[in-house]
Structures are given as C-alpha cells and as structure tokens.
Amino acid sequence: MGVALGRTFPTSKRNCNNLRRRALCVLLIAAAIIWAAPLLGLIAAGKPVAGCLGFPARTRFVPHPPFDWVAFLALSLPFAGMVALYGAAFAKMRIRLVARAEQPFPWWSWLGLILIAIGWPIAWGAASVPDEWRRHTFTPLWLGYILAVNGLSFRYQSWAPLTHRTAWFVSLFPASVVVWWLFEHLNRFSGNWYYVGLEASDDWSYFAQTTLPFSTVIPAVASTWAWLKRMPRIGAESFVAIGTHALPAWLALATGSIALSCIGIWPDLLFPALWLAPIFVLYALQRLLLGQTLFAPLRHGDWRPLLQPALAALLCGLVWELWNSGSLAKWHYSIPYAQRWHVFEMPLVGYFGYLPFGIECALVMDLMARCVERRAVWPLGRDRA
Image 1: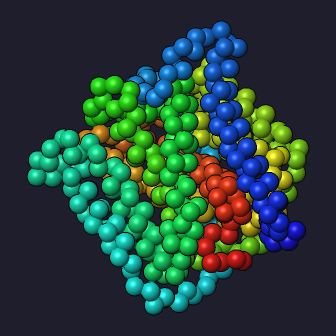
Image 2: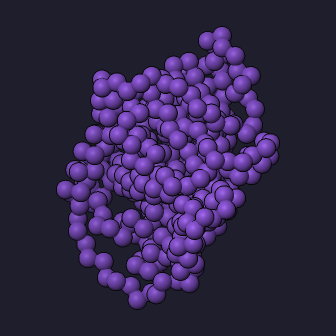
C-alpha cells in the first residue's frame, strides 16, 4: 500500500475490487438511510406515511410560518461562518502564476456556448417561442454550461474532467439522477420547493420531464470545481489540521440519521437538515466502511476538498437561479421564517444550502470515482499537491 495526503492507493487487483465494492455499499446504504429515515420518524410519531411512498415524488406548495427576524438571524449564522471561513482562506492563499496554455478552445466547448446562446432566449420566451419548447430548455442549457466550463478548464489547464476522467465524469449523470430524486423525496417532508409550468398528465410524463434535468446537476458542480482549480490555491497547510477518527464517524452517522428521521415531524424547525444530514451520513459510512474519506487531507490542514466544491455549488446555484427566474417550467421556494429578500426565485438565506450541497456532491463524486476508477477523486486535475 502506498499513502499520499492521507489517501491510500490499492496496489493489487483484489484490493481495487474491494474498494469498488465497499464504495458501492456506501452509496447504497446511504441512499437507503436517506430514503427510509424520514419514513421511520413519521411511523414512530404515529403519523401516516402513505402519501410519502409513491414515485415519482411530486411537489406542491406547502405554507410555512412567515418571516421572523430571530429565526432569520439564526439561519444566517452558518452562512456568516462560511463567509468568514472563505475570507480566512483567501487571506492565506499562496498566489501562483499560471502560464496560459497554448490549447485552443475545443470544438465541443463552442458547441456548449451555442447551446446556451440558443437555449437561453428560448427559455425566457424570446420572439413568442412556443411553450412546449420553453418547457424543455433546462437540459440543453446545462449541457451547454457543462461543455463550456470543461472547455475553460481544458483551455487553461490542458485538463478537463470530460476529456481526462471521462468514464468517471459520465457516471456522474446517472448518479445525479439518483441523488436528486432522493432530495425530491426529502422535500416531501420539508416542502421547501415546488415546480410550476410543467405539463405532465401522468407520473411517467412527470418523471421523463424532470429526470433529464436532474442528471446535469452533479456534472455541473464537478465541472465548476475543476475550473476553480485554476484560481490561486489555498496552501496545503493553511488551516488547522483536523483528525478523522472512527468515534466522530459513529456520532455523525447517528446525528445525520436522527435529523433525517425528525425532518417530517418538525419540518419548520429542521428543514436545514435536508442539506446537512446527508453529509453526516455519507461521510460516516465512507469512514467506517472504507477507512478513508474525501476529507482525509484535512489531517494536513488542507481544506480544499471541502471549500472548493462548496464554492462550486454556490456558483452553479447562482446560474441555476438566474436561468430559472425567467423560465416557464421552473421552481418556487417556500422557506420557513426566511421567505424574504429574494435573489431571483431564491430567498437570500436559501443560498446557504448550496454550500453543504456542494460537499454532498463531492462525497458522491469521490465514491463514484472509487467505483468506476477504483481511486479517489482528490486531487482533481493535474495538481497532485
């Protein structure tokens, strides 16, 4: 076995196959916990679960308590903490000059820009575009984004997930479908968003219209994460080192499972658990079943595997909300105590959810890399720091 940055590299075919099986087990067990825990919580509380069992999970507007200053400030504290953390990270950056590569923009990145240039006006109804066209623009727009951002990475780093880790990158599309349908399932209990503008006469039509857009979510975050790597980096020893022991993993698993089980009982109080609890479950299972996690570099004070994907998801979130704001088939939000000061359709405090969501995406990316490539996702790109 060889070790670098807290990451173990299997050297035999048997160990590689074991890594793949264990990573797959982590994904399956995590999915089972995330799906079942809220149902078990409702059963324990004596509440009916029949309305939460059907598939696909259809959204509807759920009224929540109105804006409240105390709750709003409490919900804003984690976001303020993350802003402070990023401020400290930027202050500790080791600036490095990145020589501009001689690579031209690949042809497929131009295709991505064309998809955006055509899809955006259609999505927003330019020149009286038929509604049937407008309802199906999310997937072309985000495929365009994915191609364009991969092209930027390739242009400036001579590396992109699409071209250099193709099998892993392609695997993120079906993984994204499963992950987002799990979030749709959790939203049955919290009722924080709902869709409008869809024309779905039956469950199959609804599933078909939503699944393709869902498939682009994690690849978009992965592409943005790869592009962020060309920015000045956070030094490997910039922050406090944090150990990753087994006991905290057991506590994280218990905390995440309990929070998920209670989300349907107290949805107005525990709706942030929809974004936070899956991190605890995924991290804990990865630590307990694999003995290694995406967060292993934190032992050396290297917080990039946590900070970079969180920022990537936030940047994607801004584009998601921008394109959503003028679209026909779109989502609206219903957030307890914080439904005020919208940036596009999203209440301001809601953007905090993109930060933990990015970490969840990174954990799934890492597990998919272990399944497909039989190696960890980090470091992402040519930088082996």
